[in-house]
Structure formats: structure tokens, C-alpha cells
Image (tube, rainbow, N blue to C red):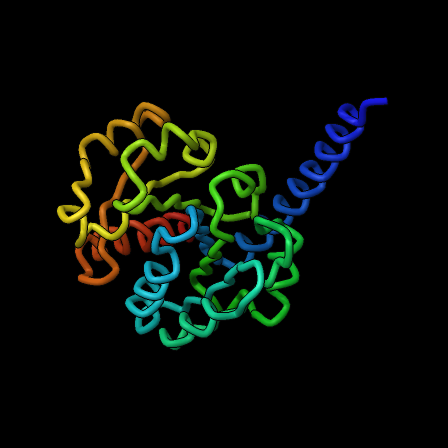
Length: 224
């Protein structure tokens, strides 16, 4: 007997429970006045370097913190701690994504009312995270210049479930012959009208514009 229908039912129940918890988390974040930004990307896209740059720049002027998901190590949290912002690691074991219950447990050491912005770095994966709402206010999908311009065409679902695309490692774009115009066109073909930023965590190029966008999002949320 095929287990197909049973597996589909289990998956639907899991996603339903996740969505219900994510909705409660979103209400909790809003009540505390916390603007929550999640980051998704494939492994090696520069997600941790990008987040370290964001936290380092925002920490002096905003009350920021981060939750970081990884399969096995706490290396990313140790690196992000250099920003002086509070950071908590979520080790997922064999699970290739964060879900709302993991985020909820990760919040236990934070006092949300003492934060302005919370960043959630998901496990490096462009497939599984697309199905799991984490209660975030904004989802960024990162694409590095080393991955090729056709990444959005290969993984359209993650771009469709994100709000903003960030092209990273622009300082080496010329060296890898990255075609930014083609990448932008591919993103727009998958998600018309999507906001796109091009940044380099190493040189800081493009970071000011992105940080202004994020802080304006926080201010808009506060005014609602």
C-alpha cells in the first residue's frame, strides 16, 4: 500500500501547526514593537558575513539581536558575537530549516520589549525554508555573485516567499563575470516588482541603502 496520501496529510498538518504558531509569534512581535527580519540563502552566499555587517552597523543606534540556525555547529553565533549584539544559536540537528517552534524556543533568553529589531538567520537551504513562516515582518533572500544569474529561475519558490532580494559579494562580481542585469531580470521574471539591493559585506558598498530601508520598515511598523 502506498504511503503517499498519508505523507501528504502529515506534511499538511505540520505546516498548519507551524502557520498557527507563526501567527501567534507575529502578534507577539508586534505587541512588543519588534521588527523581525529573516534571512534565507543557499550555503556559501555570505549570509553570516552580511548579518555581521548589519548587526555591527545597527548595534550602536538600535537595540538589535539575532537568532542563528545551523545544522551542527555554533560557529556562526560565535562570529556574530563580534558585533556586540546579543546572539543565540539554534542547532537544528538533521532538520534543514528553522520552523516557528524552534524560533519560539530560541526567544526564551530574550526580552522582546527590550529590542527594536530581531534578525533570524535560517539554515543554508533554498528549498525547505520556503514552506515555513517564522512570524517575521520581512524576509530577505540572498544571492551571491558566485552562484550564477539563473538561481532565481532554479529556485522560484524561495523568491516568491521572500519580500526582498539581496545580491551579495558584489566586490568580486567582475572577477566571476557576474551579469547583474541578467540576475535582476531573472528575479523580476519570478517575482515582478521585487525590491533588489546589491551589497558587499567586505567593502560596505550598498549597505547604507539597505540599512535605511530596514530602519524605515521598523518605523512604519511602529506607526501602525
